[in-house]
Image (cartoon, rainbow, N blue to C red; front, side):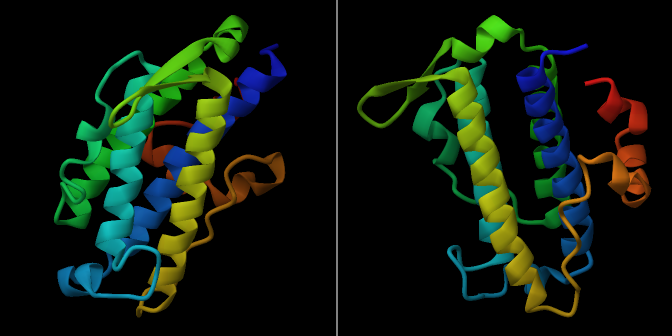
Length: 187
């Protein structure tokens, strides 16, 4: 059996990938104009919000993997103009995060992670960086969910990806990744 903390981290990474997929499917039903339309939120559009999630994922995943990308991650705050291009990049990032999390060993959780900031290098524990990254993703996905509520496309349910009782609600998302329930049970 996998160590409980590692199991939780892996499930949160899987949850992230499945929730991003479900949200992208909903957002893809919008016209390009609706995707870019100004909206009241922390970021001024769905396009800006979803691009922000991705570039910050790049920033932290690079740091977790020992890279020094730092602020270059957001030199272009909106690298993708369309939902399809944006989601393709997000999916790649999500799968990278899942692989990273599934590859962790208990000792790695306390390992230092160098986070390259503007004029300094911040050092944090790996588990703390992952906790922060998951909170960031959920926070801004919630904002995107609210922005989507102001469109003709109903926002999707985004929290049916971890507990066993929700198995019947996530089959499409799991299948889209070539996964099944064993993916969640085996972590």
